[in-house]
Length: 270
Image (cartoon, rainbow, N blue to C red; front, side, top):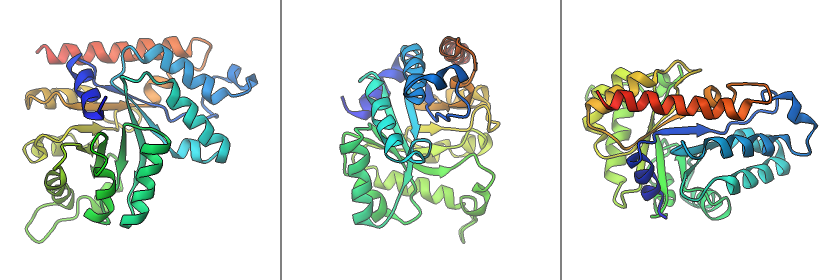
């Protein structure tokens, strides 16, 4: 199934929550540390208990790459645990000169078998093209992020009075010839999201920053609902997977994502 079809199917079922599997050995329940592979076991239980309610899973490469070969093996094993009909996102934020991006794209899509990837566009179109050429995949391109440092570059004003992130969104719309591009837009930038919804056009949205970073899921969903948008993913990592540090951690994660789904549905009915 194409990545876009997976997203459309889950959104059509009223599922908009992306579970971030940014698994940190220092934060998982201590009782798992006696196992041969605590990271994979933690991920397995989280996935088994949330897959029915999740629209996607986002895996941040940094949390796995730091452990070298073992970490990459954990990454591959984790991906294999995710049901085929649930979108997988490689949160790698890749972007380099064309031939290097081609290798990054092959790694993410051919080796790790992800459905989609996050890409940094600041080296220009030729650095993004190798990812976009995978027509059955989705490319989420950074536009305006949740971190405080987004002010340094993403919100620089251009000569025409617009912001750099707005130029990025305009370019992504131009690049989206295969209808497989989306953008990353931080949940903490809710006013900018409202102001730029028309500029975003038909680009699906990956929205991180809810919870620990200060973004409000109520504000995000309300803004998108008012704009008649139903093609988005709201990423929540720590707020779901670390809801409990006890033996009930997986059940706690299940109850938390169910609660988020119920909250989203209550907003969509209004």
